[in-house]
Amino acid sequence: MTHFGGIKSASLSHEEAILAGIDEHGCWALVHASEELRRDADFLLRAVAKDGGCLRYAADELCADEKAAVSQNGHAMRFAAPSVRAERHFALECVKSNSEAMLYVSTELRDDAHFTLEAALSGCSKDLVNPRLRVWLEKRDELLVRMRETIDNQDLPGIREVIKDGEEHGLPDKDLQEPRSAVKKLVKYSEVGSLWEPLQSSDGEPPVVLIRGSWLCSLAASGGRLPRRQELPAEAVWDCRDLQADSEEYDRGRHQLATKVVAVSHSLQHPDPSGVQLRAVANLARSCLQDLGDVDIALFIDYCSLFQEPRTPSEEEVFEESLKHVALWYAHKRTQVWVLTATASSELPDATPVPYEQRGWPSFERNVAELLACEGGAGQSILLVSEAAMELLEREIEWPEVMRTLKAKQEPPKVPSAFCDLLATKSFSEQKDLKMLQDAYSVVFEETMNTMRNLVYCDLGWGDRAAADLALAVKACFLLVNINQGNSVADDGCGVLFAART
Image 1 (cartoon, rainbow, N blue to C red):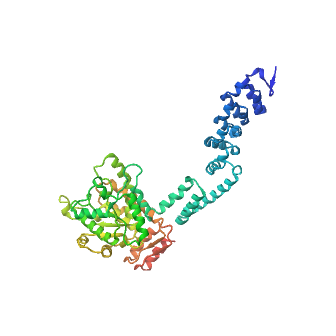
Image 2 (cartoon, rainbow, N blue to C red):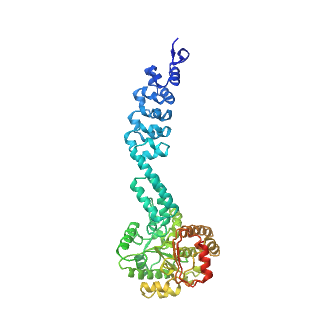
Image 3 (cartoon, rainbow, N blue to C red):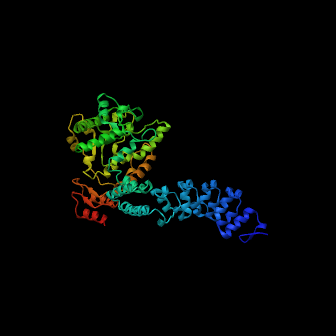
C-alpha cells in the first residue's frame, strides 16, 4: 500500500488523492498528477481554488483559463498566461480578490492610471501600485477634497478651477460628473449656454425652437398670422448652431445694447387670431433690430416654439419634454420678457376674454421673470405692452424710448407659499396645470435664490411693506453678501431685512 502526502491512496481515486495532497502539502502535489488530469479544466479549477500555485503545473492551454486565473483569491494570476494577465476585466477581478495580484498584471495595466484607480477603489493597497501612479492617486484624493469643498460652498470659480485641474490631471469622467453638474446648476439662469440646451436634440425634434425676429417682422408686414409650430416654415426657425455662433460673435464684437433672446408672455390660447398682437411684437422687434444693426434676435413664443394641439404621439412626447424648460426663457438673466397684457374683446366674439392678470400661465411667466430681474431692475428685463402701448408702437419709435416707456413696475420676489396661494386664485383652461406650475415655481425659486450673491433693487418706489416681502425671499439666499435697495425703506423695513440675514 502506497502513501501520498500522508493519505492512503488506495482508498481514494487518483483525482481525490491529488486534491488531498494539495490540502496537506500545497501545489507541489500536482507533480504527481497524470498528464490527463493536468489537462482537465474542471479538476484544475478545484485545484487552483485550494492553491493558486497549482496553475503553474497545468497544461499550457489551461494557463490561459481566466476562471482559473481568478480562483483562490487571485493568487494564481502570477502563473497565468500573458494574455490573461493583460486582460483588463479578469485582471481587475484578481485584484479585487487579492491585492497582490496587482504585482502580476501586465506592464501595460500597471502603467494605466484608470486601471490603477479601479484597482485602488476595489481595495488594492496603494503600496502595490506603480510608484508613479501612487503619486497620481494621492493627487486625485487632493482634487476630490477640493471638489467637495467648492461644491458645498457653491463657489463657481473654485469649482471651475478644480474641474480644469482634474481634466489636466486625467481624472475619469465619473470623478468630474458631480462638479460639472454643480456648475450647470449654478449657471442655469445666468449664462447664455444653458439657453441652447433645449434647442438641441440628439434624436428627432428639439424640445423648443426660437423664432427669427426678422421673419416675424416680414410676417406682420404681409398681414399674416402666427402659425403653430407644426406649420412653421424653415426660414422662421433659428438653427441652434447658427444662433450660438451669432451670439458668440455679437458678444465679442460690441457692448450688449439690447437683448438677444426674448420670451413673449401673452394671454390667449391662440396668441393672436386677428394679428393685433403680432403687429405689436413685430413693432418691438423692428425697433430692437434697428438698434442692434445687422444682428437678428430670437423669440420664444409658446404657440410657435412648442408643439400645439392636435399633436401626434411623437409631438406629444416632445411637448412633455418642452414643458420642463418653459420657465428658463422667462427667468434667465440673459433674456428679456415682453408682456402683452392687452386682449381686445373683438378677437373673441363668442366669449368674454379673461384678463392677462387673472390667467394662470401668464401669472407664472411674469413672476418667474421677476425673480432675477434685480440686476438692472425689471425695466431692463421686462417690458409691459398694454393696449395703449400697442397703439404707441404703431409709430416708429427708437429702442431707448421703448425701454423707458414700457418698463415694467417691479414687485419683490414672492416666496413659493405666497405665490402658490396667489396662483390658486387664477384662471386655467386645464386645472391640472395649477399644481404643475406651483411645483415648477418652487423649483425655479430655489434654483435662482439659492445662488444669489448680490441683490440690486434701486429706485423702485418700495417702502416698508415691500421690504417685508423681500425679507421672506432673502431667507432663501444662502450665498447673499450684499443688498442694494435704494428705496424709501424706513427703519422698520430695514430692521426686517437685517433680521432675515441673521
